[in-house]
Length: 222
Length: 109
Image (cartoon, rainbow over all chains, first blue to last red; front, side, top):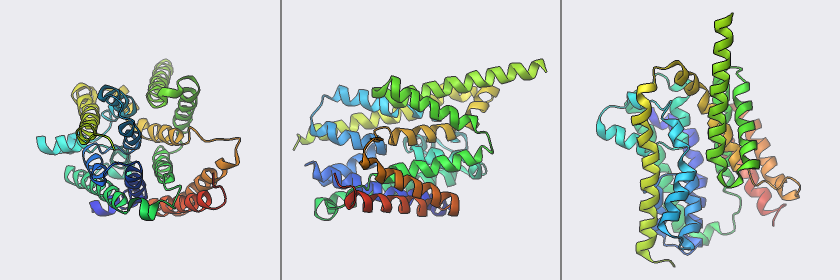
């Protein structure tokens, strides 16, 4: 069951992991570093940035700050990720550790409302294995085979395109929500280009709250 | 090649920060889950978050440059395939394949 849940999005991890692994060895880092990073950090978009920082030997404090800025979006996931269904301390610990964007998108979708904690954990474990496995393979094949292939990085864009389309469909015609998100992203890109993600999430959350408060006031007057 | 200890430490630091951001908010936010405002946010956030992440991926698209045509075409293929077949794997592989072919043949830098 979890295999089927994870198949679509999870297999989208494969080209991305291959690209990540190949980039690691092309940057002069050992192949096992790709495996270590993929297994232990498990945050795709930040791991791509981490390669450049490690090669440039930036201070650990700067790495911590960048990790915070890129991944601070996960704070918002706690509002809706179904952690309450996952049983046991160990299960909960792993579930939060492996709460990547894709796991969040799949488990908060409309079709996932009846999923058990077990099914959620299996899904997360499979996503984790796909990512770590494909990164390791990419690093081992490395420059030899993948050097001539450019543009694999689009897999991340395609992945978010698919997740966005599915999530918007679940809203059933609530188009102001994706419109507000898009406006927040554009405003953040223009006003805070260096901190686009945290700025966009903050703007979007504020806009949703404002919309909720005004619509509640309207309905209480009616 | 950077020092091995440093490269490993960099991974551990990034992992600790990332996990902290994933686990700590649950302690703070779980009591709020029954609130109507949080329920309102939680039904709408997944779609908005994915739209923002998609916009983030496209943030450096050089719109005035022909190089932008490869990702634009690949995006159109991904969206088209997904609206047509609703098969995530097909949409992702199709869009990525179009991008790889265009980026390594027609629109090389």
